[in-house]
Image 1 (cartoon, rainbow, N blue to C red):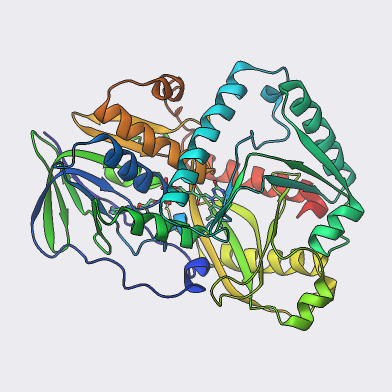
Image 2 (cartoon, protein in one colour):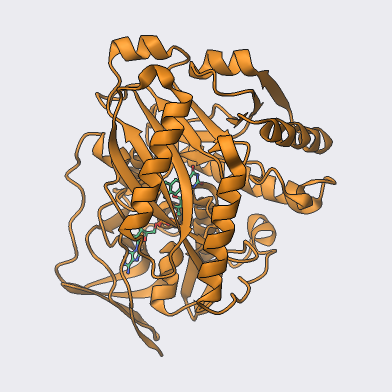
Length: 448
Ligand SMILES: Cc1cc2nc3c(=O)[nH]c(=O)nc-3n(C[C@H](O)[C@H](O)[C@H](O)COP(=O)(O)OP(=O)(O)OC[C@H]3O[C@@H](n4cnc5c(N)ncnc54)[C@H](O)[C@@H]3O)c2cc1C
């Protein structure tokens, strides 16, 4: 039996813009009394909700499932991201990607399993195309170096038997309205979500089977034959616990000195007017990943239930092992994002950003998840290495399957990974990582 006081609770800089532009929701109660449940999932993000859905598919109806979320659903990183569900390996420079390695093929298969799982939820929970769709993904290049990356990546895709389409500057302008891009690479298979609307609809779809409590942070975890989780106003007694708190698994005392906490930042414009939309041109909805991993992600969304047509830009990554982003990093992100926006959309010079925000990612040095049974009937589905829409979904499914089934074909593939490796000591880690990221951002040049 162990007793752990939770050392830190999540703090997210700025508003969750995606959540702010859609209709407010009544939401869910907080815990105000002591309760008992068979299964408790801590964290209502991608991993937590995927675990809840998979449990609801696997368990008999009389076993109860409860989700405890520290904040409101979709207010944390789950509702703050850019909404790319990526099936193919992300890093265009990856040496490991060349040579048709079994590992890459396995990763693609797993990623598609997660996207299929998300799609089945989207269908069952009646999500419209603006909330979940599968348009594939476009990687965009705005420098000669970026074009080189795209070409070499497309060769790897050809070796893997994956289909793709190369796009020239004209077709990129046709999509985005911007002359900024020199080339693009379109691949099939990926999905795009409106992150906050998806997470809310997912939670809502679970309502009939899963009890969800918001604003109910777990402050203490006592493990034993029955586990007890304390929240500010009530305790939850549970036989089984799944911790789906991403980097905050460290705040529960697990994986010390193994996890890196990185913030990335984004800005969203105000609603574009019809004149501005005409000036911009291009397609109503599109999304671009940068050819350089440190470049700028850009997305244009069309109106969804009155939220308006808007453009979202994301860039900058900073390591903050305190799990909090200092104001200076937010300011730096604002400056960089205004510059990126102006470079791409000179026809929209008078368009201001309405929302600025940041959010946490959890990475490990060897890009491995913080996954597994940590104590008897306490599982971790954490550390998604920056691609949490897909990896969070995967680890949530995996935690549920491991806890209920013990083994499955999917688990055999998923569990074929190592533990997160040990990090260098502080202050060397943060200094080194932040210097390296600054250097890479500088190298990204115009891709930023
Ligand atoms: C700006 C930005 C853009 C991004 N873009 C993408 C993208 O396009 N594609 C992609 O795949 N990923 C993207 N990401 C990353 C992605 O958002 C995360 O990897 C993902 O949210 C991780 O999912 P998760 O469920 O593991 O964790 P989270 O989404 O962080 O959910 C964990 C939840 O646990 C809760 N929690 C923590 N501690 C406690 C506690 N003590 N008690 C109760 N609850 C607790 C938190 O409040 C949180 O809601 C982006 C992130 C940001 C910030």
